[in-house]
Length: 363
Image (cartoon, rainbow, N blue to C red; front, side, top):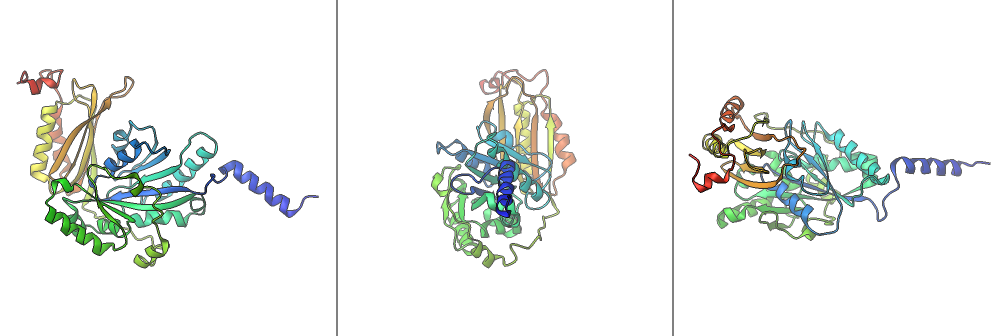
């Protein structure tokens, strides 16, 4: 004769088959990687993914705007990358975050995808509080995942200004379990120390460390077990119930795309002109470029008046070659940016070998 205990056991077995049993060793640890626009989060994430640490990492990427390029920048890694666009992870797509976390868990339980931890890289405009809230507000997520820590990257060059102008930057620092200060190699020591003092006033509990191009020990980033709910409730008493969140309306993003190959010289002049005219308003800009005669993808990233170019992997034979550029800023004249970009398209006179520029054979 069946008992209530037997019925409960069968129900539990059915649930386990549907969702998968809890992984051996407990819930899956999650790191929230945050920091204001251009602080160096993607550089740090690349560092984590390429480190020989033996971990299997699932990455959840969030971009502020209609389309992102970080997925392309990280595409050379073997880890699973899930990209979330069309909104800030801390508001309009929070439901998607819950759905993705549970979907990843089910895939893991079915043996479709093996991972031992998750890293969520938020958009630079995200308040990390609602993101962290997700791990306590949803029952399934709370059972299956453990919020290990909030790691915040702060730009030494622009950090003081960002902390002054944007509440999101302050929240990112206040909620951090680890504070990593980037770009100290291009910042005067006096300026760096002023920033460090400001960070200590905003967050007295988080260790602060200087990092250069994402070079920081993995043990400083993973398995921190630094997220303390009681400490967070002291900072924000309504943490578990608050849904308040606003963005600066004057901050917006837009994407410029082109399937036509570009002239690298013209691109360089284009970016230089934009920096001279609107550098202070350009919070973040980055892209993947399709350069005429160059087999590799060209990656460029910039913050305010600073920009740099680098090479990524070669375009796959079956890949659609196109340039994708994302601009995030305050009151940027989008039509003008698009109009000027048209001058970057390569012509018949553009050499097929970009090296010709350096060799002086191009006019």
